[in-house]
Amino acid sequence: MTTKQLFLVLLVCAGLTGLTGCGGGGDDATTRPPVADTSVPASATVSSESFTVYAGAAVSDDTTEPLSLAGMEPPVSETAEPADVS
Image (cartoon, rainbow, N blue to C red; front, side, top):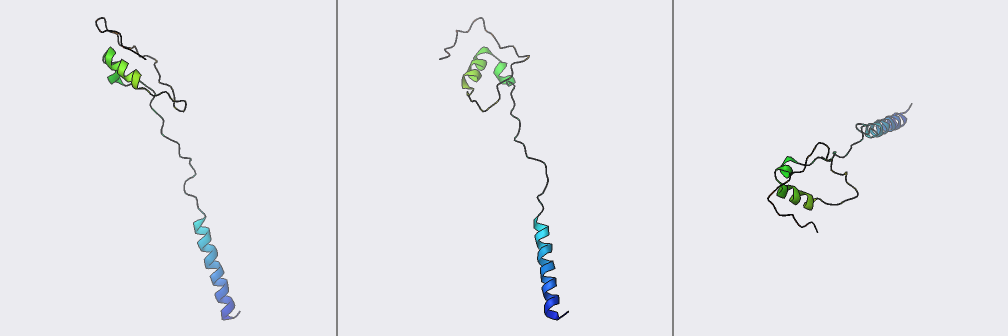
């Protein structure tokens, strides 16, 4: 084998080694978006006014999960005037 052929074989091997090192893809786990909290925050259940403000500020969006009202009792007030919801 001549020096030129040996050099060519070594060059091809070095190139293949470099390409092999670039072929890895990292971890195979798929990255999932964070799960949105669907519970009503405790600050919204302090009073009927704070609950009304929270409910009025909630964004209606078809791409998000609905809020979970399981186990939550909306606060009521015997003295506060009804709030306008329109």
